[in-house]
Length: 495
Ligand SMILES: *[C@@H]1O[C@H](CO)[C@@H](O)[C@H](O)[C@H]1NC(C)=O
Ligand SMILES: *[C@@H]1O[C@H](CO)[C@@H](O)[C@H](O)[C@H]1NC(C)=O
Ligand SMILES: *[C@@H]1O[C@H](CO)[C@@H](O)[C@H](O)[C@H]1NC(C)=O
Ligand SMILES: *[C@@H]1O[C@H](CO)[C@@H](O)[C@H](O)[C@H]1NC(C)=O
Ligand SMILES: *[C@@H]1O[C@H](CO)[C@@H](O)[C@H](O)[C@H]1NC(C)=O
Ligand SMILES: *[C@@H]1O[C@H](CO)[C@@H](O)[C@H](O)[C@H]1NC(C)=O
Ligand SMILES: *[C@@H]1O[C@H](CO)[C@@H](O)[C@H](O)[C@H]1NC(C)=O
Image (cartoon, rainbow, N blue to C red; front, side):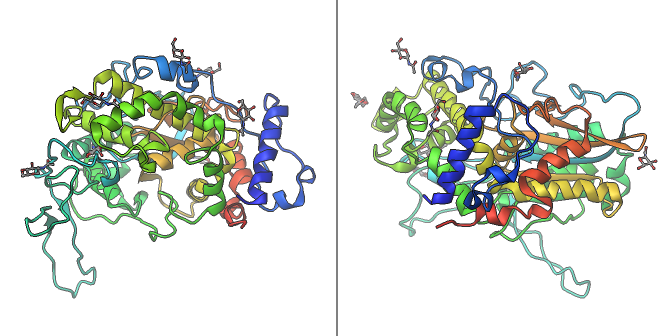
């Protein structure tokens, strides 16, 4: 690891240890050693620790029983799964007419930007066990992929979709799940959840945004990442929001610089995460892996995963994805191929899920270094969001509703930058909404997280409920720069 990253880390630890309980709006750049100044943001506010909850309490994680109030089930595809108060990680709460916090009188909604994780999918191939006892089929949907000339003089094309298959003559057929899915793809249940998500947003925003969804397509814009699963979601969301099935363009950035996923190169950000999180030997990170070693041993024995497979053992990510995607689709938990009496139980799966939530909380919030790592790694999207808001207010852009379909990592880094008070692993469909209001010519902002008002541990932001817009934009600008002009230096590979 480079000197500069180390120095920046030490600086953040120093700040955290000395002043984190004090609300200080900025610190003079003169306190920064020159080498750090070049690669560090000038913070408008500092890192503040998240609330103390069971999620970041290792004893509750290791010795607990439930999943801190979350359930994992395919049973809820309902519009407002917050309705009964139990969030379903497989279809997270989002803005909907039943639970929407109605804004006070006098505030006119001017701009909305939504960002959410895609919906239910199969696991990624890397998260499947070496051998599986059942296949996974996706014959109940088509993944449409085709090119079509936009030039009106071109020939028309047919609407074509993929049928996934393997052949007996292909000796490289998957040893994990077989069947007719791409691993990953959004499943049929995920498509249904995507449609409902769009419908719920439409019901809430159609009137305050003056029925733009039916009247003016230029005021509504969709953006996806270079990973096709987000386009699979966007098609369903957009159909539900417009009652139209005509073709629609989805904004997407080149795969190598995509800021929404994100994929832009940020070596220093990645190095900082790796210095304290997944793959590090820092005892603050490894203590939960050590404490959960018996669980690894048990699951390795059932799954056939090699105990020295780093992908499965540097974090709980793979086992989490592997087990949660089964429960999210109503599939059974796995048993040992050679002994069908040796199975993963619900209580074992819950232990894995607690560990996954704990890891996200540590990587993105509990570590004092998380703010800098996330600002570098996701600062470009944050700067784009700030610019979208400015362009809407100034009239430079006609867009008043912008909808982004992203990933768990995208949401996690955004929550990290905004310093959410209680961090979780963002589940399927997990959603943040930025609402900009006009009251007598002054602008205010609300942030909704899971359909409810968002609370930051940073007192400059606090409960983001009609916060003066300039406070939020000032926070973003100070962290990442207007036009993300601080990010190239923050990301530079420092050797
Ligand atoms: C976090 O702590 C603050 C301050 O005590 C409290 O107001 C807030 O409700 C807590 N957040 C959650 C999600 O419990
Ligand atoms: C879990 O409980 C056991 C038995 O009471 C205890 O020895 C262990 O320290 C606990 N684990 C953690 C991480 O607190
Ligand atoms: C879970 O991991 C096992 C073992 O590698 C694999 O066979 C299986 O396909 C995985 N399942 C999911 C849903 O990831
Ligand atoms: C894969 O599918 C074939 C055909 O359905 C089946 O015979 C085979 O047992 C399956 N293998 C696994 C590992 O699921
Ligand atoms: C580990 O955590 C402790 C207590 O939270 C903290 O004092 C220490 O600085 C952390 N170490 C590192 C390397 O982050
Ligand atoms: C692995 O599982 C089998 C049951 O299938 C059990 O008999 C054996 O003790 C287990 N081994 C370990 C190391 O847990
Ligand atoms: C919003 O504020 C501007 C002043 O910046 C004012 O001219 C405009 O009428 C307001 N719009 C609404 C809908 O209140």
